[in-house]
Image 1 (cartoon, protein in one colour):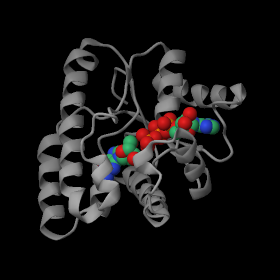
Image 2 (cartoon, rainbow, N blue to C red):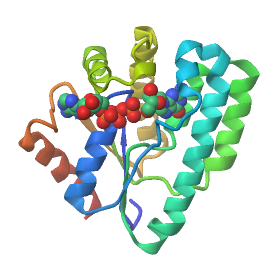
Image 3 (spheres, rainbow, N blue to C red):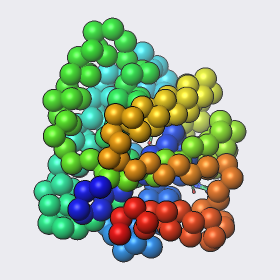
Image 4 (tube, helix red, strand yellow):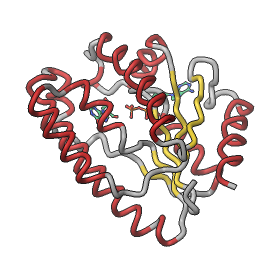
Length: 207
Ligand SMILES: Nc1ncnc2c1ncn2[C@@H]1O[C@H](COP(=O)(O)OP(=O)(O)OP(=O)(O)O)[C@@H](O)[C@H]1O
Ligand SMILES: Nc1nc(=O)c2ncn([C@H]3C[C@H](O)[C@@H](CO)O3)c2[nH]1
């Protein structure tokens, strides 16, 4: 992996990425990089009409993440500071391949590669996989109003898209370690030993 540890927590919507990334950062004494959600002007509209708003939303996420990761690279990673992030830039492709169509999808793909190919990527991905039932329960518990009308088929599709994406990353980027956490069976919030097991796996890859 990279000399300076860079860990991304990934998984479908509501899997617990921000929760686990925050816990890992505290445990490993690293800064945490979090996605900004509340200031996103398109999410609300997107969930009401995906076809109408997907290009604006995907571009917004891409530009924000590009800026945030560029700053992280220059201000932290290149200065020798390890980082835990609650996302990996690759999620832009996972979502956009599902939400965009035709020429917009093709244009987005090109822009994605231009912006991100030379970014420093995480050496470790902690991938939280979870069932539709678990994700729906967590999304309901968190209670963001714009997510409550989310189509179950969209979420189920994303679960499958994440599975394929992680399997293909394992082949195309064998230098990246993927640690898979069973989010249905492992409750890292309520069970300290479950969290400790995840920490042990991460430590093994970064030391
Ligand atoms: N292991 C867990 N057990 C129970 N509740 C959890 C667990 N992990 C997260 N939660 C709760 O589930 C909700 C979603 O968690 P969180 O916001 O961390 O998910 P996320 O993957 O970052 O979501 P998003 O994809 O929207 O960014 C929160 O209310 C959080 O407190
Ligand atoms: N379409 C789309 N593309 C993305 O890159 C993306 N990243 C996150 N999200 C959605 C999931 C949560 O509702 C909310 C917070 O993660 O934003 C996304 N939606």
